Image (cartoon, rainbow, N blue to C red; front, side, top):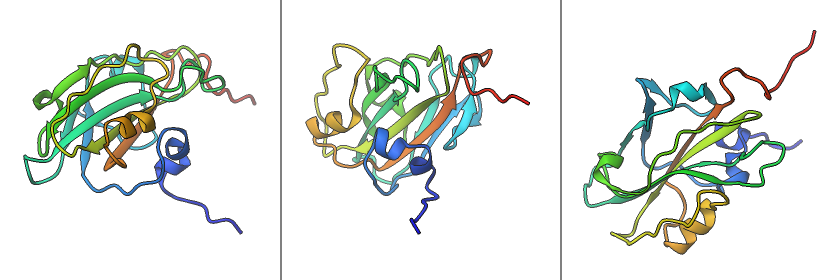
Length: 177
């Protein structure tokens, strides 16, 4: 009998589609309008228009982190030909702070899915030190694994994701009686 994982990042296919297996080792809190993001929760596009508040744990301000937010389901979950769509990229974030203390390489762009249920994934990497990170030429077809390899970031130290679909719900799963 196969072992079934209860890790929400595995169940939600974040591990596999975006990331390789890793262990969360730094607390991260992502909040939109006083509502925390928890793995697999649902938000509406109108709730995520403005960039979220992000609090990064740790205990040493000398430790720096990179935050990446991507959509692995663009433009639609059934045909993710733009996987991964980059929504936000911030580097040099000191531990115990948030993105406003870091270097915003790619400005936050709110998710606006057109069809289906999309996952928005926040990934946190610990940097070896301050590093010059260049903005990619475009947001579509970003690859979190390749980015981490290019900048020698290693495995993630934290990740969270939420689900989102068009405000009116069209294009999502339908239940018929």
